[in-house]
Image (spheres, rainbow, N blue to C red):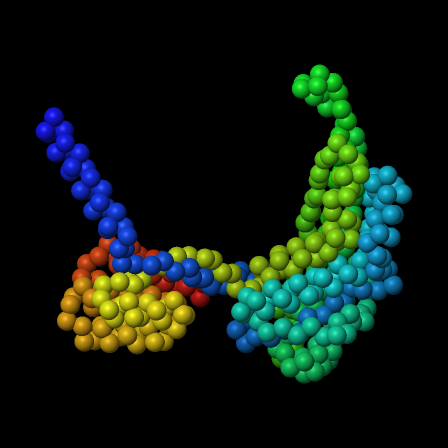
Length: 352
């Protein structure tokens, strides 16, 4: 019996020790975004873009939501047709502008008169004359013109009723089912006026589908995506697809840094919490230079490595991570060095 209580006492002590240890974890996690070049990113000298459209002609219209929906309702929502919608084109341009700007890679200008006149052959818009490209870039002080030069959307809808057996009621019931499909194909061209060169010709084609079912036909169509909204959402999807092709891609990762281990680290942590990295790194630099404790110095050096990585200086990040590793071995430092080495190899591949 005495041995039993001694074992219980030992387990309690171990649990308390673990609780205290985890409550005093000396590191904190950070969410960071890692930039990665796209497959067809524009040359570095192209930093700003004028966004225009060269597709809207007399075949395009801008019907109100209800008017457009009525066309499909008159066909019992079983209809397949090409719809040239001005709002869908404009949504594509505006969404593209926002996405490219938010990527941090490009400055963007969308002119008020963004629907330009153009010439067309049987299938596609002819390339923009270079004097027009030059004039646009000079007018809006940009490096290149990004033009939407083909935009075709075909809308197909389907409505049906199906019978279902309900075991709970031992009876059959009917349910309404609606489907809306938008098939789209678009063409973008990017014009470089300085070199008189088309940097990108990108043709995109895809399909977007909406489906829903309800026992009540009224409830179904009350919440079902309208044709007008579907076309606008298609414009956003097009913008997302093209942004992924030419813009910097950001992936989220986590990093940890030492927030405890002395009054100086705690003080620096306050600056980090307030996103004042310059002041935090000044404290870490002083500890790394003058600190007498190896443990404290290695933590400060580790934090400096994280700080330089966030600033985009991978070489200095590796330098300080190695110093931290040499000052005092920690598994967390070893793991971080492997992450930095992986990032270094990624950059080498991108720059080939």
